[in-house]
Image 1 (cartoon, one colour):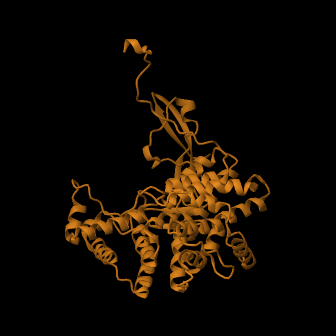
Image 2 (spheres, rainbow, N blue to C red):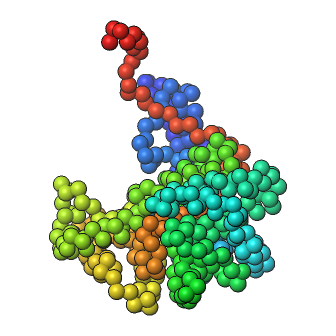
Image 3 (cartoon, helix red, strand yellow):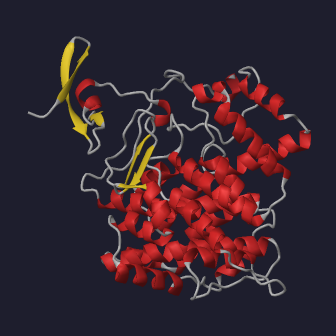
Length: 427
């Protein structure tokens, strides 16, 4: 007999099945709770609510574990490429050599943007945030590439690769146009990551010189951000996708959700915090004292994590990238000096250690992206490029789910009870 949990509600006993995941996670299946009892559950923020079953990503916040399709993210960061990791997430397995080559070729073949799309870019205000532009432009892709309605698996997979290819071109294009610079087109002889860096920074008067360590740092950054279970933006993609909208619209929603400072914008918030500390001239000791004061609204950005209650496994890897990239670039930046001093405090101060306020991946990624020359307003865009394979995988898994249901959360109403309308002349 399958395991069940018994609940006594108003003196009556109800039984609900228990679902157990492959890693031992357990959940009460309350699908029929309201139907049988008239009750719903209340869980603001959905921190205790499972919205789906998924075979894509496993994470354990207490143990600091993150795996894509069962493979530890540490192994992927050390041995894999972003393109290979994207293939793994979307297809459920690692590609063989021929499949990886074919995927890389297709990504290069699809990397150009329809010339008519440049008109859209040029009509955005110069001060428009790149995330707003990217969300709108991903949605606009549906008008240029409507083949998504094709149910042929090969055609759908082509749509996935087209999105992966074009998002980096669109991101680089938005940056170039915002600076008033000529668009740089992708090159067939460059890798996915190298192409992006070249499209961002190449200039006719100063050709961009690719550094293997910088390319690898970007590769690792995108691998670490490729998926992270049912976070805010992924949940947005799933919820919007549950309405059976097209992939472009669902991804556009994910980008909008990622934009927030409590989610994808956290790495940008780190740099903004460091900038404010530098401008104020405050001592690190004073900054730390304020962070410890519960009555002070000041908060250190880039420390601690909503899910991880130990060291973020991605932060360890990104810290290594910091230690490689910063000395090589010989960057002299007061913000990076402040970041280093804050890191020392957080890794040694009992207050931070006891509360698990370790530097997280946003802290180190913000530092690395700044050192690479990525503008602060582009940080969240960089996150979105990396997260795209995860969003596609989650959308696909939801679309293929035979038990699919449109997302429709309940609520507990706390407003006025039935009230008669009062004509305006009697108010």
